Image (cartoon, rainbow, N blue to C red; front, side):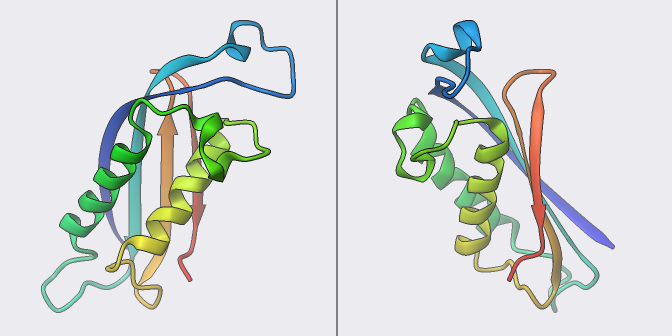
Length: 129
């Protein structure tokens, strides 16, 4: 199986809700690192799994959307604790919906992994379509 990964990084803010997590309950920044990994068994007629430029453009748009934003204030986080678990799923849904070259007939799996520190990450994985 072929696999392709593309990464980006940006700073965004959040504060945790629904529990007593000390300083995490206060608005604070994280240097998020996002990795998109796409897997499939076949390449297109050009020898590509997906168009890397397309994936990079979508990641760039996400970076622009979230850079210096407070996740709690974004509509997609309404009613949710802005955890990296939720964030990875939200990014996955947006990328799969907006990346034209993620063809559900050829792509078996897309994983979005989000790091909020050098030691903590969460991922959401699924089949497009």
